[in-house]
Structures are given as structure tokens and as C-alpha cells.
Length: 267
Length: 199
Image (cartoon, rainbow over all chains, first blue to last red; front, top):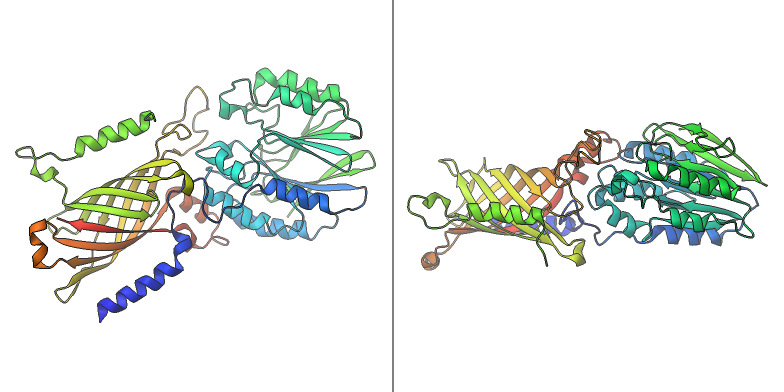
């Protein structure tokens, strides 16, 4: 009798627990893992036609900030006219699938589509494969929105032991070649160029590409866990960092006509 | 297929403890064999084990597991598992139920994307405080050990056990600990199940 009960309970229990089966904390995906979210979200972004104003959120470092994410989502959802949200790297702390799943659970509740860029912590363990599966096969990608080009790229040079290939200078040179119909540019990446985690040998070339373009509004970064603006190249090229979600901050960036401004939001 | 350095050393370690009937070393002959599904040590894993302590309530298992590419790998995992069975309930002469068995285990993930120690030339000291290759797990299992009929005595199989095992690891634990409002404790415990043969 006891045994039958045990077996019955076990079967019920196993039935309810199927999504608790884990093959490894380092598995690159499971049966519920979403794919190509950046492409899906960009499609959503382009499907809505709005006014000429561009207004977006720059958030970053969602690593281990799960308790803060619902209030973040509520704060962004309460704002009007947010076209999209950047999640600018360090999505995860340990590069684990479970962390990406937790973050996605909250970010998917944003009313606006979100675009994720890779951070240095997302390079630990199988993080790069997980990022590629969730968000984008390419770590460097760009899109045009209302005449502004957003060039998202990997600046996590230390993770490649400063091999001279990250950031990809040749790709960036192509991306920042002046284009017809583009009134301005944003460079979006996790590690700021003036950080010790950025390849110092590429610092000058990187700045030259951005300043030569002449229409770059700003470099938008995260990584340093504080809001800041610096001008490591010229006074015309601000390098702006957003504070971490753990510290309950994000930035709102606006382009009205051809004027760019930003402000910090505490939530 | 080339073996990575990590895999090679892990295999070497395993082969060193794999038992041979050398005189006076009978204690090295495994007393159990295990096949497990999931439980954070592989899609499938295969292990050998030993009973510990005079009361045989402890156990030590050494396992190799893998996650195939189609299930989120390819990944090899080596595990060393310790468990203790404080409660053992006899169900007639048919079986013994061990309802709650706490345990600890360590897993090693060989391969190029994982580090055991950070490269000192690449990173400042303690840039990442944990090792991505090694995980420390806490576990709780339930085991039903069925006495095999006497007719099977010749096969050398003493009992066959089925078990389920929940586990979490230290990185899940710190993720939960700082986010107890949003993450339920149950979310960080992952499940596996298996069959264990006692010789």
C-alpha cells in the first residue's frame, strides 16, 4: 500500500517537474529557449510608425539584479513614447542559461521591443553561445531607425586577450562610412573605449572612425556601474555610460529633429 | 575527435580509481553502478559508487555524463557525489525507502570556454571570483531500493534502486540569495532521476 502510494506520488511529481530537469547549468539552450530575439524585436520596432522623435532607453548590467527588474519594467512601461530599449551588456553574471532566462522573463514584459548587446560577463562559460541563440548570431550588428543608424558592437576586448580583433575595426569602418539618408549615428557597446577592458591598441583607430564620420551623436556604454559623460576624443564626441540596473538607474535618450539629449532616471 | 586537456586529465583521474582486482585492494571494486538522466550532470550519466561508513548510509559516486549537441551541448561533465541516508524505512521485505538524503557534489566541465583558474596574463586578480569549469552542488534525493528476488542472486545484483535527486549549485544560490523577492527557492533546484544497482 505504502509502495503504491509512493509510486503514484512519484509519477505525479515527475509529471509536474519536467521543466525542472536540467542536463547541465552550462547547457547552451533548452526546449523553452527563445531564438533571434533581436531580429524579432526589430521587426516589431519597424512595424510601428510613429512621430519623428526618437526616444529610447539605455539600460545595462542586468546581471543578478532580478529583484530590481520588475520596477525597471514598470518604470519604462509608464513612460510614453519609448520606441525601444537597449540592454547594453552583462545580461548575465556567470554566462549561465538560467540567468538569460530570468532576465528575458522580465524584459519580455516591456511594452517596447528591446535589443540586447553582449557584455564581458556574457563571455564567461557558454555565455557567447547562449547570447547568440537568444539574441543575435552576429555580435556586431546595426540598424537604421527614422534616419538614425545604431551600430551595436562587441568591445569586450579583454575576453579575447586583446588580440586586436575586438572591437572589429574593419567592420566599424564600413558601418561608419557616411551614408545617404542617415542624419546621425550612435555607437552602442558594453565596454567604453576609455576602460582598461578596451583594447588600448585600438583606442585611437576607434576614435578616428567615429570622429571622421562627423555625425556620431554619442558612444553609448554601460559596464562602469555609474552614469557619466566623458570626452576622450573630441568635445564633439561624448562617451556616455549608464548606471547598472542593480543600482536602479537607466538613461532615456532622445533625438528631436537633429538634436540629441539624454537624462538619467532613478527607479 | 581530439580530447581536450581537461577531458584527458579527468579520464586519467577516473582510470586511476577504476578498480582492478589487485590483491589487497578489494575495497576499490565498485559496490554500485548508476545510470542517471539530467540532474545537472549530463543528459545521461554513468557512474560507479561505494558505500561509506559502517552503517553503509553514506555513498560516494563518480560519474561521467554528457549533453549531446541537440540538447544544448556538446558537453562532458565529470561528477564526484557524496550523499547520506539518515532515514531508511522498510517496506515489508520488498524494499527500503530512503525519503530524504542530503548530499554534496562537485562537477567539472572540461573544454575551451571554461576556466578552472583565470589566466593571470589576461585578467587582473579576482576579475571573476568563480571558476566556470567547476560547480559545487547541494542535493537532496529520494531513493527506493528494491530487494531482488533470490532467483537473481547468481547475477551478483543485490538490489536495484530508483531515485530522484534535486540539486542546486553555488552560482544559482548567490543569484537567489540577493533576489529572494523575485526568485523562489524552488526555482534554483533542478531535477534528475536514475537507477542504481547494488552489487
